[in-house]
Length: 339
Image (cartoon, rainbow, N blue to C red; front, side, top):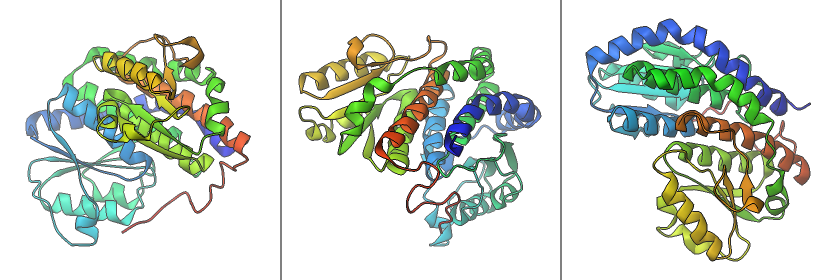
């Protein structure tokens, strides 16, 4: 068994353990944030963690009404400039906590007067040391170069933070159900898409709302594990130019949201099929031949997390079919240190 496959299977236990580990830190942080009342949230992350930050942007803007912006880490690390963040929330996300530019950005944000929070797996890392508050992912050691369980743990931590901050009991209960739902999601079979994807030169992943981050993560995994060119777009952004890529048989993975964004995505799927694309959609409501099964709906945001768990299993099988080594992706290493 590869490290990647093993760690995909460890994600449910990581999410379950996180509930205990984060209980006290989240209680303290949510009280602090309620008193502080930040008017903006600035995120800072790279790679899979940047996709987790996209998920956080959806959560914070959707449930708190607070605008979220992604910081460019090189502003601090390369250009030596501090952002004006006094009284605001700076949220850094990193599995290793070792990337020099993310650490520099956190230190600069703290110096400017922001409340700095780090969601990290390595709690003894430089990033953890640079932040006022540390929220452990609690995923245990992750040895696979491609992050899987730490990405899912990051999403779960963001859901827990949002639920505590907004006092959303329904979301808290949904996160509590997530470990069992991830186990069920891992059993689902997306092999119906394997043949088309294995023959593809490139493809597009599309999401919207809670599934935009999922589409971005899926595209990254197809690149790094399968050596397959894939790009991700929101359903709205795709029709503003990238739709020109579509030709007969062009593969498109659509990660369908379970909320108010769903009708527009279903209409887009129908339009893309009319243009001849090979469209695969998650969940029900589309032609059976192009349907990728999903767990029964529960909560739109946790439903999205389940989709990436199923996708990871499919990506692993696709890599095996294409003959790539998921534990040794070319040109990559586990910890990438950028400045």
